[in-house]
Image (cartoon, rainbow, N blue to C red; front, top):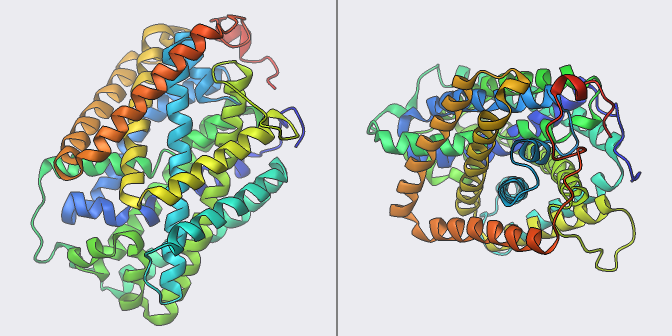
Length: 450
């Protein structure tokens, strides 16, 4: 890889492909069954609610990216809002970790669909082994550079968005536009629906991949925001099509029982054996491209945080640039999570980390930057409120059903902020204008970025 970020290496189409690649890879394939388990027969509406919450959140990222497009994306936003502090560094690291968690979530989903396609039960050592194999493959693609990622993302995005949308339409048609999931099912509790929105938000959070790639996007002051809006719009349409198709094919109890591979389970009764294999193929394409796109973004985010001296760095004897090393770190951590956690716990951990980070971003921008970037304060406060309600409902439900993951999440977040506090105390970062200070957006927004 070249040492510097490749400016103008990602077109608007590349960037939308990358965003949808991460979102669709995780959302509809890995989370449909888990969302149905929490929301009951209203699970398609959980995707709509997730899109609404994401829309308010995206406003902050778009306004910041329009002003200061950066290859560090989230790290840039946080240091603009808080300076090079423990809060900024800790929240940025939470975001990076949530993205790595997403990679392990999607890698395990790839494994479950592959095994179902081979008529094998998705359990035992094969699931993590195949997941780790996909992560290694994604590493090799990313090591080839930005252009390889962009071209592969384009191809896979077209295949999977068109293919999965076609599955949704065909499934609805075959099911006679009925909704089997609602028959004989309870309405579900409001708390369960709110908790399910936390997972639905994960199905959209891939838009931050676009924010983290800002410096490589052509005309980033305009195209980063456009790509975010287009990606979210595409995904909400695809998610609704597929959710209703699954619900028209299977009763709720079967969706929940097959929650790790719900689309494959729904495909056979609706579309026959050929439809089943086509759906599995689409799932493999979607999840593979999702891992590739996510690793592309998170490795560059970690490189930027290293450059900003907000996280430590060691070569561990490896040759190459800092980004080569952060790419390797990303793959190692994602592989470890793939081995040691199941899909449900991976998704829960990702939801906790992401929502806490998201709240900190909105609060920091509202407190310090809203006037400078021309953001509406009520939108930022609404985003905070929605995140807080969803997070509280999700934590309460998980405390009842799986308290260990709540403890792990709290311990993990506490550990991240304590680690950053010690690191920054021992290695005070420079408060150079390049990253931490608040020059006006009008002065900076037309400057070249690297």
